[in-house]
Image 1 (spheres, rainbow, N blue to C red):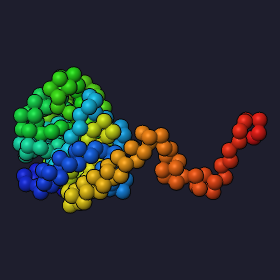
Image 2 (cartoon, rainbow, N blue to C red):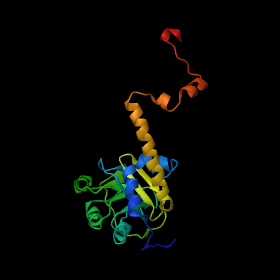
Image 3 (cartoon, helix red, strand yellow):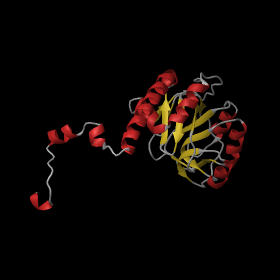
Image 4 (tube, rainbow, N blue to C red):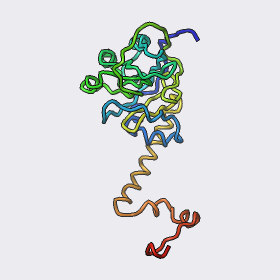
Length: 230
């Protein structure tokens, strides 16, 4: 496909996005049938950030951040920029100056399947980034890619406007069309887990709450009083 920058994309509604942020990556991942998770090598540059937003996608060439600059013009407040590379790369394609630009535009954070630099400064700014690597290796601005096309980032398909949820547990992508249904399922899962949590606090065991004892017997587990009885 020819290099293309799409100006207008559809986005999920704000209440759904905020709700998914509150539920967090692990719950959302489970709620959408354990799908949409990016590879665990994609890690936050500092702990404690928890965000969700609409994906503005970027396809860049390795070691070249020109298209990130193009995408800075197309983002809207509340978005998350998602950067994929045309081949595997760990160069430091994003740093504090780009972070300043995105923060000024109201962008919630960045997901980049390449390297990030200026980690200390970005952390002080409280601009969250999840990246494949941390690297001071510089980049050029020389070749075209695309903005707001489907990309594969961290092993997951991300379409423009999909909801991206990111926290210390990782990153999960929720298709925009199913975001409201996934939020409902995540909230139901959280409510169910809260009931289990209260039972665990009272001293009940997961073995009994989840009815695992019959399964243990079926699998052939036997209990003995002493090791010498084995």
